[in-house]
Amino acid sequence: MERTVFNSSHSKEEIQPLRYLSRAEAGAIEKDLVEEFRFGPQQLIEIWGHACATAVTKVFPRRSLLKKQPTLLVVCGCEQNGAIGLACARHLRVFEYEPTIFYPKRSSNALYRDFTTQCEKMDIPFLSYLPTEVQLISDAYNLVVDAILGVEATPGEVLEPYGTILATLKQIQIPLVRWDVETGSSDGISPDVLVSLVAPKQCATRFMGKHHLVAGRFLPYDLQKKFELNLPEYPGTDCVVSL
Image (cartoon, rainbow, N blue to C red; front, side, top):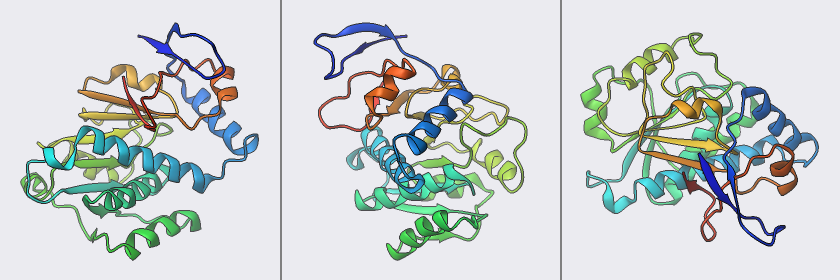
């Protein structure tokens, strides 16, 4: 895939191939963001959560939703991806959607607990259990946001309760949104929307859904250049762009 790349440091546009990152490269970028550019972990989670919420609004504007109420379900894991899901849910609430969170195994990390508290203070409901009857999920929500696993997850090594949860999500008939996960991997889930945080990862080459968005506008140009990311031009003031 090729993209037209433009940056204010250059005087003209160039056609360059879009870079798909390995796990090691993705980890190196995040390490540089934290150690060299002094982005805090909470700041990154906030940026990514906002970007993921924005991606949802781009693909599923409230007026396009089939149900009268703009309901959606955000399913969160206990690691960083789950915290991004919590931030995403909070921003979706600000955008006047009606998120509900299922967070079966809450993290002991104080940083992640802060995101949980923020959601609770905004009166976002938390489910005590996930219905195994998928029709109940489809009847209640317009779409599901899967924030269980991240790019760091190893396919085939999903612990409970997440294995059972993923088996349920595999059966749902409403749209599914994911970010930075082994798309089309052993869990058998094919999302309708994939959001690539920072830049597309190699797992995104297997994405067969309708909408692939990148959320990397915040990335300092020096890092873009160092890793030869060749990110696409972002329209207007948008923090995400469709590929």
